[in-house]
Length: 296
Image (cartoon, rainbow, N blue to C red):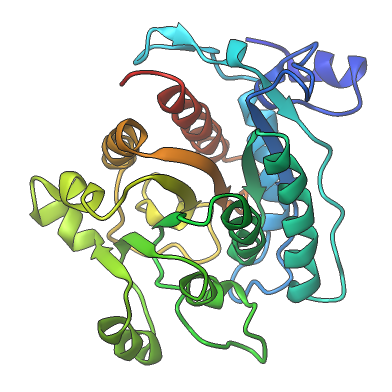
């Protein structure tokens, strides 16, 4: 493992995985982008600190993957400086994200975005969809995020999935909280939504989800999809969530079937002195990179 404090002394920018020297942008397969933004957070803010916590945790992570029996980082992981926060509101922040991810995708790289609140995912999906117009989005989340508008804006984090449905097909997994508005919208929409109960009650749930996925895929992982017993560091920690091996089972199958064109991990709100959730998020990102570059 690399000492993060040593890395900081050598280089002002901390790199995902503690890689020093890191892979150049031109040679990298994955490009990590931090978006420290939580302006529309409505319960417990703090996800703006999520990207830095994930990257710091990743510097203490073993780079040899014991499941895949390989080191993933040689495929190339480049970490960009954090995206500058747009204070004029979520619409402008989403636009800034779209421009940044568009540049990455144009270079045939795979964007890996670290949030930050979930509203930023819309900008990434817009950019990836522009390059891959047959895109489908897989959303792992405790919340449906299907409100048409919330707190005076259609770009609130609670509306991100609704906006995505206006762009491309959406499949949700882990849902266990929604408003009346969302509950009434869902049956009349094209959204395929699988609750957390579905995960626990059906042996072949992951295979069933994968039947709705094909071709080009973008994955968005709101960390509150996990049970609060293992992921308490989120703005709205809903009880009854999925667990580590549940997520890996699905991501392993999806990586075999689809072309994952980008993904994000959002809504980590670090709790001082509690490093396990930060480390889990970092490990999840690295494991998904491994699945995407392996025959798993």
